[in-house]
Length: 241
Ligand SMILES: NC(=O)c1ccc[n+]([C@@H]2O[C@H](COP(=O)([O-])OP(=O)(O)OC[C@H]3O[C@@H](n4cnc5c(N)ncnc54)[C@H](OP(=O)(O)O)[C@@H]3O)[C@@H](O)[C@H]2O)c1
Image (cartoon, rainbow, N blue to C red; front, side, top):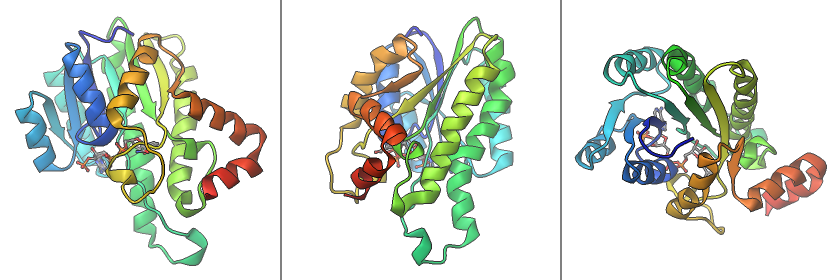
């Protein structure tokens, strides 16, 4: 995909990896629309010259309203990054978690973005070329013990990504998966391990987006995907460290 002159929607674009991506893509002369729910973050983004849409991805009516607004105000939308996400860490077998909490994680990480994608398909289909980039996780390839609901939501996103790629095979829409390594954002601030900076990650993956790689990621993650597939015991050990 060309990395300039697009109209790009980034869900979860107001912080972390999404923000770094948005900043880099704006500097490359793209129109960048950020979708998030936190009004203060959206206002800051607006002051920085971004287009913004307030939308809580756990609310179907807000998703529908966002899709109508996009059709009316941004008819040239040709790139969708499904990047929003939350991660809750708890030992599933050792506590009682209300179903609402599990639903929130799965809805934001998976169902809400599947719904948004479906509503935007007709608009994307009208473009000469269009792209959907789904942010998943290494934990979607192998689950982490203290985050198995998050892992399940990301495994779902990986399956959605693959299914969508085949479903859209004969259309102008290309589908790519983006798998970040552990990255220094609000999501990982409690974790004491080596983290990549969001800016370095984005600088690394932009050329891969340009080459339309099916899976956009760093070498360490490509290795982890192989370990998860062929050596599950080792993958479990790595994630339990
Ligand atoms: N950081 C990592 O190490 C890592 C590794 C693998 C995968 N990922 C994935 O990368 C993506 C970005 O994560 P990050 O680390 O950059 O996280 P982050 O800094 O916490 O940002 C999460 C973003 O998601 C948005 N969001 C959360 N709930 C939302 C909702 N209900 N409706 C709309 N937007 C919502 C947030 O907006 P508001 O503030 O407005 O809620 C925020 O912009 C996620 O999908 C995550 O699972 C991250």
